[in-house]
Length: 521
Image (tube, rainbow, N blue to C red):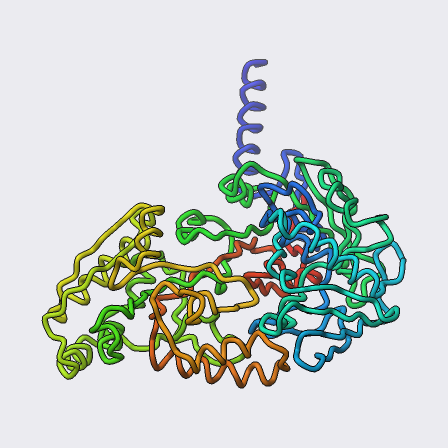
């Protein structure tokens, strides 16, 4: 009898277990465990960086420090999304007669994050600090100040800057970070303060804490003139960007700056968005103007028509590029340019070549053999030209030998690239007196290029660039294959105005936040 009762009880318990298994969230004793999803907003944004040796802008050449310092410091001017200068700490400016001096009026209601008033004395001290390391090449901003002869404080809100010559005085050079004089007795103290440097700036963020080799925490600067950030940026120092990609999956990082052209392959199957944007790296095809046939504009145009830019971007650069009609930055100074100068058209190319009388042409194409993307692009250019009946000898050399051949003019065509400073002074590759690598000369263009770096207003510079743009798209001294793009890998949870630029990667970060669903029982 006892065994039957025990068996019946076991059977009853087994039946209850089956019933409870059929209804999710119901406990053994009949209680209901409901899962609730709540929307959580977090203001702590985690950013990985590989190496930040110092936040002292006067003696740092680290790329990571450059981008961080954009958040902490401000310059007299900054560049907008078309690389046109706009005033930041500068209220107004006027050039002196002859263009070798510049008087800048600064804003009078700006304070350093420690509450001390910003003044023209800080600007002079900063210029002197950058000039003091000019010959050591320790700073990223050497070329920005190289033409400055002296700086003189006229009063608390006015400074006079004098230049060596009038051909390199554009206000685009005055974008370097301004540092506070009151923290240093003399300029040499800035050079010595490297390892344990704690920055004090006028920018939107201030350093809350630093643990060397581990993290840097940035919080809103309470004295910032503008919208004070309500979020916190946690900069995590990690060994390599590959590790950062894996940390997305566990929510340890929320965005990562990537320059590799194969970044989409690295991010495959990761829960991130990738925002691509134009870099300051142009890939181009250069023509040697010492070659008789290449002096003929029709031949250069024929070669351009034979280049399939879109295929090169997709095949050689993993799609990490944008089309552009010149070697200047895309839409520079607001002049539309994001299209190929010539659409791929072999038939038109053949006709141009025939009309120029250069059928059966033989050319030497130079490329640096240790760059895989350019090697592939060179193969595609060679194939396109051979379809026109041009015989192409492809010469692939290692970097040092490639540069020697380029300097010696030992090529007819070359595929290469340039990473251009954000001031976009293009005289080294276009001006006759610069000994440019393609032996190109155009006196009218020389004058315009000099004028663009002289004492002219932004509006006049834009009008001058329109003339430059017309010349270089007509004569094609270089044919722009593409502008490489950079990428910002962003967590799906990150919200706000995410608007990266090659010179301000974290542009718009003041309003970023994390918004995600959290499941609770």
